[in-house]
Each structure stands twice: as C-alpha cells, then as structure tokens.
Amino acid sequence: MADSPLRVIGHLRSCFREKFGTPRQPLLVPGATASLTIAREHLPEHSLDGLGLFSHVWLLSYFHLNTNKMVRPKIHPPRLKGKSVGLFASRSPHRPSPIGLSLAKLVRVEGHTIHLSGIDLVDGTPILDVKPYIPEWDSVPHASSGWLKDAPFPTLKVSFAAKALKDVAAAQKRLKLKGLKATLSDILSQDLRNSRDKSQNKDGLELGFFLYDFDVHFHVVGRTATVLELQTGNVMHKKERRVPPKAVGLR
Image 1 (cartoon, helix red, strand yellow):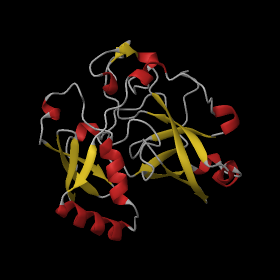
Image 2 (tube, one colour):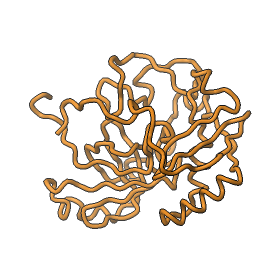
Image 3 (tube, rainbow, N blue to C red):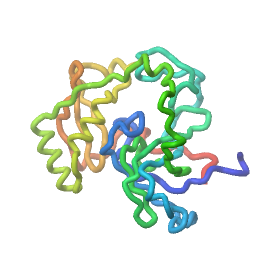
C-alpha cells in the first residue's frame, strides 16, 4: 500500500462546516447540498462523460477529521443507548482504514463539477472515488438490517423561535436558497447530541453548529429541539474539530 497510495480526485464543498450538525447517514437531509470539482489531472471533461444520466452516486471518502489514535474493536452507536457492537457491524468513521461510503443524489454535472444533495459529509472531505448507483445491482429489497431494526434512531420534534424564522428568511434571500427551514428541521430531528455525554443532554442547554455561512443556535427541552437564531459573522470555535490531522498515504 505504501507504494500505491490512494489518490484524492477532489475535495467536497459541503454546506456542513463541522462534524457536529452533519447527518450520521446519507439522504437523511435531502436539502443538504454539496459540490465536487474533479481535479484536472483526472481529465473531468472525459471522465465525467455519461455520469449526468444517473440519479444517484456513491462517494468514497477519507475521514480526514478523525483524531482517534487507536481503533477499538467495539463501538457505541448512538441508537444503541450505551450498548456496544462490533466495529465492523457499524458505520463508525473510526476504522483501521478511515474510508467512508455515502449515497448522494446527483443534481447535475456542470463542467468539471458534480452538484449533489442529501449529503452527509463535512466541508473539505477528500473524495477518493465516485461511482454511479445502479438500482438493479445496488438495491436488495429484502435485505436484513441486522441490529438496526430493533434500535430505532431517536428523533426530536423541531420548532422555531420568532427570531429564528426571521433569520431563516434572511439567509434564504442572502444565499439564494429554498427550503432552509425544512433542511434545519431534517438536521435537528435526528438528535445531534451524543447520548453518552450527560452534559450535552441537559434540558435547555444552548448548542450550535455551523451551516453555510451562519451559526445555528438551538436547545432541546424534552423531545423538542428549538432553533433560537442563526448568527452570521461568527468565527468557528473548537478548532480541533475542523483542522484535519496530517493525511498519510493520500495524494
């Protein structure tokens, strides 16, 4: 492997600016947008020919923001509420080879750039490959979902404070977006909090994450997440979550 490093074909430009707030699975947030410009060395004018005929694509990515120094054989998925499962029975990003697999909706191919939605990857993610999704081969209607069928993902109701509604309208106008309220509802309904972090799960604790060019502030009381406001002009904090460690074996 040292003689044949994986090659990065481009870096994703995603609406998600940090790990917190990014969906844990693809297509959970249909309004989550991203774009991928293919590096010129891969001759995108030729290599992208025909891709626009497909509705969805697989993205193979590198989990560049991982900071774990060791990989454990068992992990604690959020939906298991503290119980553990084997690493390879999960989609945890903390793996011996930190490679991700995401299914995304292909919006359009424009020149050297692929426009996507339903994304679950943070801005700047190195993309290793793009493959078309082929329903005849990639879909297994009666496949088993393993332990997931007995562990439904915790969901929240989502509401918006009056200030947040004004901020959403302003952001849509500024960024020329549509459906931002629905996108925020889809993100927060999945309960972003770490179920094992008691401090993060205190009722009424104000939390935030960066999306597009704003900082989303919200709190959770009971089973309802309320968007409080969208702040612009903020500098991202918790720098360690956003500056990737040195990538090894990538070109």
